Length: 272
Ligand code: NAI
Image (cartoon, rainbow, N blue to C red; front, side, top):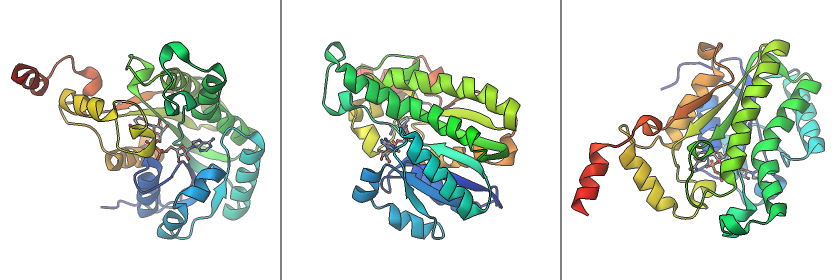
């Protein structure tokens, strides 16, 4: 059901790789709610993915390649976006994550530091770069909203999440620091959503994903939040209904983060 929550708003969505991507679902929902979009992803993902189908489905949105770690690519993306919209944007979604250490199955005691830096650059510093370039180019309209996607491994340890845990901790910290700055300069809010494990390319790339997906499902009184649920939450945070929410890491996890033990988990353990 659509409520016209984003009527007249314009935004950039980074990170829609395929139909399972959280960014993909968010783009579809944003379009349904009346937003006009520009879609972006890393050039290699544009070649491998199916983003042009999404572009058609959201009213012929331009697709502009940008490696989110490259200031030059971001400048090019933003100037093309400003030309396309004839002005600034009201929202940006950073839905980007990648760890070469996780991809190559490196153990936490045997990380490549070159990869570690890449993890931090792609998954966290890109969030800062996105905002710094946006500020310098005066891209954001007043009362705009910027969101990144995080995971509870920023606060608690999960085996196999590896250096992505540090990346998420940095991402959440950047949201607070840049949120402070952007509130004062442009009345722009910056938050991260800490999402349940979700079946996507990035999610299932983490070792043991199926097991911790199931564990999290049992430990969340409402069950895991799906990518569609996450898209709905994203829309609410882009809408004018949440104008005073900023510098927060917002748990979107069916209650997982506040649960010590659940009956479902007890039943499961007793069975075993
Ligand atoms: P996904 O694999 O569909 O999306 C990740 C995106 O990052 C891809 O589109 C990829 O092309 C993009 N990307 C990687 N390197 C890039 C670069 N240098 N420049 C620009 N884009 C680049 O997976 P998903 O799950 O939709 O991921 C979106 C966000 O949600 C990520 O930040 C992820 O860490 C976060 N998240 C995912 C969870 C899950 O279980 N799937 C749980 C909590 C958070």
